[in-house]
Image (cartoon, rainbow, N blue to C red):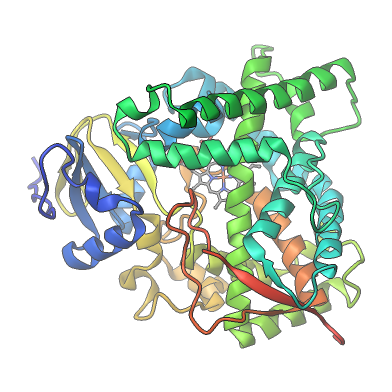
Length: 463
Ligand code: HEM
């Protein structure tokens, strides 16, 4: 029997336990509690014990789920589940459909199959710069433009669906996107209310249902259209799903393909947009890093920012990769992950977790741990990701895409897309962040995204 140590907890109140401490946002209170109580502590949320941890050894054990831990949809993900359905992101690891879809879809997301999307990524990037060119010298809402860019990219690459988000600087948001944003924002509200909230016939609940119906209908039409007009030359994600078969000759049914399409759209837009937005912001704050990014982009891709960037060039953008990784460290778009304990066990350090307990893997805490990143973890320093430094570090110190079985399927896609965008934008523009005070994060967003990030873009006169 290993010896166990009780975990510390802050004072609780009846019924809520500690739930009230985590609203309206949990990043700040979790950071403060970590500073006070150490990397691993316990909270009680409406009667359920949750172990919060940013200890890399503990995280390692939790991320290799089986046989002690699992991803079981609850909390915020539970509220997103009506939207993502039984798509990969909002399914339990124990759901046989998750295992089937995971196996079928993984081959479509490797580095080699993703190369085919690079021309389209270049094309959408050029649409983005054409829109920015119309707004030179004016404050531009960076997160909105990056979201238009990532949405347009995943729509075109994934499903040959044109949301027309970059046709003009004042292009309207597609109704699908308004509907999705409404549902995601409402999911966050629901996650901090009692269960009753979503069952009352309120205006917000009716709008949620109508928005979901609109999203499903849009995607169902795309699937029906593709089934009626098959095009074997197109190897996008939709074709991949419609034609792939597992070892039993089975493929995914149309309802599940619909849920997967919606899932890729949810999982693939705001995360990558958040990464790009913070990255542009950090480049305004760290001129030496910015100069190195520019030097590499010009050296590898040439001086003409309208020439198509090739997969071969992308693979040489090593410093830009470090900068993107550092951005994901300092501002992980997904700041925490949830797991459930299925078999009681003792964690490294002697903490007993019991079956039914939840675990919050505190990614943001892990990324700011002094033990893992040295005395100044808040400073933006891409050298953290030099080959030597990466090799020295704990393998679970950096987890913006999660890891192991339930890791992000779109990691390579997101990194490709971000590299094409960054290598193009840096050669075309000088960026200016006009305010003296630093940019903070948006407390109500689903991802850790910048709040009200306005920047000015100026055309570069020479390279
Ligand atoms: C899962 C992060 C981009 C598709 C995840 C998870 C994280 C994550 C942390 C695990 C969630 C959990 O355990 O609950 C990110 C970040 C991105 C990004 C930081 C961009 C910078 C994308 C893109 C796509 C995508 C572009 C689609 C093309 C998915 C899917 C899953 C997932 C399908 C669920 C995988 C499974 O459990 O089988 N992502 N993601 N992601 N992501 Fe991403």
